[in-house]
Image (tube, rainbow, N blue to C red; front, side, top):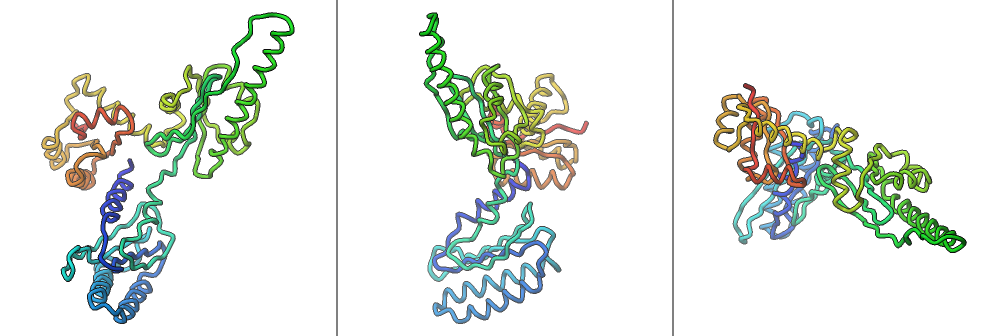
Length: 358
C-alpha cells in the first residue's frame, strides 16, 4: 500500500470508531484552492449560531470544538495547503458531564474537491474514504471451454466477481449426419457461452478500469477475442493476453503474475517484487539484509537504511515510529499487504525488514 494511503487508512480507521452522546462532533473539509480566512470566518459565525443550542452541555461541547478548530487552523496555516485540509473535533467522552476532546487534522494525498461543515454524532469521513480506492483497477478474465473466472485487480487486492461452468457437449466420434448434428449443437453451445462471457465483461466498461487482462489456453481465448462479442469499450482496454492452461478462480492470481510487464504501476506487483528481492538477498546471505525491529530501529537512527519494508499488519504504533524515521532519514519504504503469498510469508517472519546502504 502506498505510504500516504496507509496513513490515510489509519487516520480514517481511528476516527470512524468515535461516537458522541449527542450531535456534537464537527467535521470540516476545506478544499484545495479555497480561501482559508473565509472558512475561518464561517466557522466563527457558526460558533455564534451554536450559542442558540438549548442543551447547555451540547452548546458547550459544540462551541468548544469550533474554537479548537479555529485555533488549530490558525496555528498551522496562513493559507489553505495545496491539497486542502480536513479537520475533526469533538467530545467523545461516554460519561455524561465529562470531557474527552479530540482534534485531528490531515492533508489528504489527493486534492479535496468539496467544502463541508457538519455537526453530527459521528465524523463525516466519506470524502476521505473515496481517496482510499485505487485508481489503478484492472479487469481480469481467465477462460477455457469448461470454466471461466472474472474479477478485478484493485490496488493490491484480487476480487473474484463471477465464475462460469458452461454445459458444452464433448466432441462426438461417430461419423455421418449424427456427427455433423452434434458438431452444430456443440458450436452453438460454445457461441452461447462466448456471448455470456462477453456480456459479463460489460462490468469492465466502468471508467475506473484502467485495462483488461485475458488469459486462457490456445486457441480458446484467441477465438473468443476474435469473435468481437465484447463491447468495443472493453476491447479497447485489453492490454495483455496470456497463454494459460487453467481458468479457475486461483488462475486470476496467475494471470496477474504473468502480466507483470503490463502492470508496472500496480501496487500488488510492486509489493511482490519488493519482497522477492528481499527474500532472494536473504537466500544468498547478503550482509546488507536486516530484520528484527530493534536492529532496524538502530539502523534507521544511524541513517544506514536504504529501503525499509513493513507489513501493513504490524503494530500501528511501531509502524508510525518506523515510517517517521524512514521519512526523516530519507529511506525508501514499502508497506506490504498480506493479500499475496509473499506478503504473508514476510509477515510470518516478523513483518519488518531492511536493506542497508552498505
